[in-house]
Image (cartoon, rainbow, N blue to C red; front, side, top):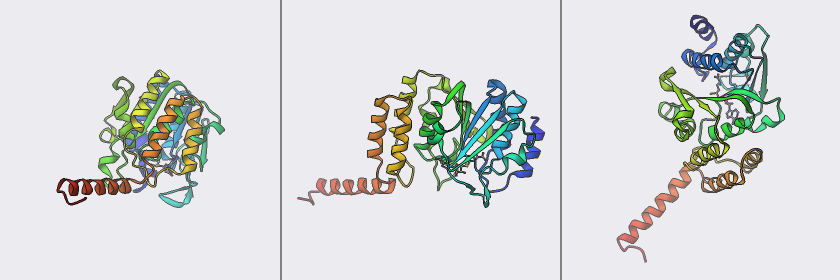
Length: 277
Ligand SMILES: C[S@@+](CC[C@H](N)C(=O)[O-])C[C@H]1O[C@@H](n2cnc3c(N)ncnc32)[C@H](O)[C@@H]1O
């Protein structure tokens, strides 16, 4: 698609608060689709479906056949009365590429869908460790080019209340040769080339899991079981053991961990001053 056509469609449908991709980020996705020519594309985090619709256009122009998009929610957060992904078919009306929107699903549900996929765009929960969990879940269902695009590398510094560090933690763990960040929207979008030895992928995941988790509230027991079940397909017992250890460490919320640290620090100072028996 020509840049002017992307701009025109984007301007017609995007609204403040839609939390979607910018024109130059969409163009980065287009360039990756032109380069790798995926047949089947997967998106994690649909929201309005604006990006999904553009992906369908790019697939049509490059021999692709379908885009599947999953979202935990059934309604779009920007317009509560609208269904998840409602814009996708307004933006892409041709119909040659199948658009398969899956509400109330996450990357942990991919086994029950019609995989595998050739390329993915992850733009869901940006709190750590979600982007890493989503990447591991998606990687297991990827064939072909095995390229995974991530959005919001700069979220942790732009949205001071949200501090979505997840994409940044994962990006930092990736070997330089297997990650590519684009200048779009101030270096906010990147892609990972997952053509790596599974041992290396696990090493990267363990590095990321080992960083303090910011997801709040902490993962529930049932989510932990789902992640474990997902990791059991295709990953080693070692990765699952490391994940379990990190779950235990991060069980309490970040404020609770900070408070506990503070209590220990105060006790230590009291000890230093000889104020405690
Ligand atoms: C930033 S929006 C996605 C924007 C969309 N990709 C676009 O470009 O227009 C994030 C979406 O992810 C969904 N979400 C949050 N956590 C999720 C998860 N663990 N799995 C799937 N979707 C999730 C939210 O409901 C929300 O609709």
